[in-house]
Length: 372
Ligand code: PMP
Image 1: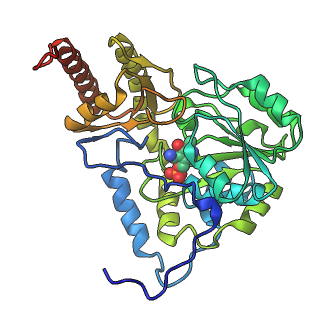
Image 2 (image 1 turned 90 degrees about the horizontal axis):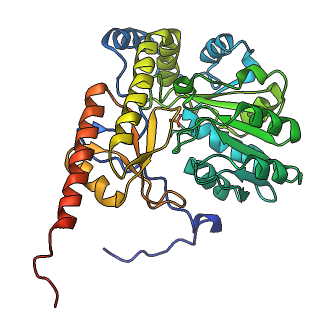
Image 3 (image 1 turned 90 degrees about the vertical axis):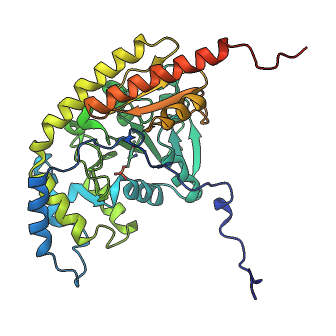
């Protein structure tokens, strides 16, 4: 390579410590690593989408605020259009939250281990991060959170319910106590709420500081399309509109999400199947020696297993991709498996039993060249 005639000066200093988000997608037979819905949108609905897409003008900018979709979401949730904002996946909205409520001189309260994007967004926006870590069962240290917000300097908090990657819901009474005790923006990330069937939405009218985040990526099989939304008070929504990219949700995504949302009842059987499979997989995992699964209200299960890296590789060698979290703080020995179809779950469980048996056998065998 030839030398550049001019080099570039360093990027903004807060980028130095950051590593780009890497979901570690690899080719596999069973994708059980990204908490996606194992069932794609069915053929009939796809045909409907194709018909609608034929009429979407491609030469025009989309409606910046996705108002038709916004109205559908508002109606379904018993709120008004000005209480809803649609984004390019929940990820975009999380970044908007950091831009609008974070920034230099401002503070975010995080409850790790949780979704790593929160921390990243705070770093990107030069927001100070206060971490109140979860206990050994991954429950929120509620007293510590309430005590910390009482100091008055927290600008926003994110409560993930159910939490990713650990799986459990946050306690509703705790969320209410938090909302009452602080005027910080309290974001309740309900990306997986369709699998827990619990939501804090009934309290939207009571708390101006409550913002609920949801996504089309999980229950509605639309991770590839990138649509998410928030429900909140008109004042919070107005502020988020100031920082967002005007055309972040393209016309094609808006049209697809509308069709999906209008037909969301069709996804119910798939959601119920995932919930049923979740308890079956949990029970099966409990029966495997050395495996400790954590109870989950979402569409994935976190479990501890000795030599998690080796187990991950063994599963991958058998075509099953799960998420290796064992390198992350507090998640030593942890893998996370997304609940797939019944068949995929069986494949995963069989492969896990085989891999663990292989590892145990290798450990029993004397080394080929015993040392003196
Ligand atoms: N919140 C949580 C807790 C998540 O796990 C995810 C997806 N990994 C998101 C938000 C964002 O999802 P998306 O951008 O696909 O809407």
